[in-house]
Image: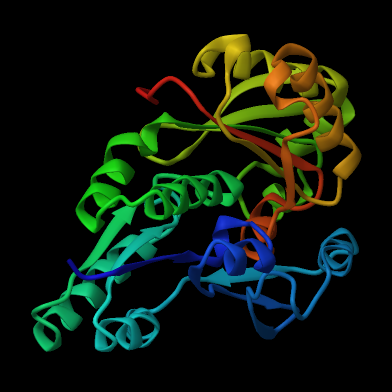
Length: 295
């Protein structure tokens, strides 16, 4: 049986050290800030404070996905070395990366007929996407075959729940995701939209909550409604945040009060430059395994 490697994209929003320690290959998205193109290199060349500080100051950031050629160049050394590849892409509900990855995998199949690149649409984003990679690394390290790991990813990806709120609507307004009028009203009324990622991997507004404090509580309430095993949950949990770590820490603290096994064990990451270009600062996102997403 041949060996295999795990790979994903930088939009999985975990630090470089995590991917190194878990032996997961990462290919970079790109972003253009004030007319200059950068790699989304997991904050190796810019700090989160610098990046979100520029967005707060009015800079604009455009993002671009991994190209077909970049995927092929990324995977080919592994195939040439005799490895198969299990690659999860950013959700097709928010990016075209899955289609590009599939085309690249098909092009390599002709050159390496004995090898397989299994491309899975994660239907996930940010540290939820990263959390799936963490589970897959556990499976690989536990002796799962390539076929077993590919099957697990497809079977369980919709059990990964995403719930998040946005407290600063400026970037969403600039990106056309909310109207200027809606953003103005929401800001004046201190409304924090609470959203999730649905079964198609798309971002869906679910509630309009008055005040950030209540939005923080709402995230925890949604987790308790959907998490596997309720207060007895023993699975993984992560949070990603954009320049609002105190808010993320409060979410983690409240979860620890209601799910004892997670007290002081929740991973808090920075939202990366690509996802952060769209959310802007002031976003807290919560990820855990629970009910299968059906709407």
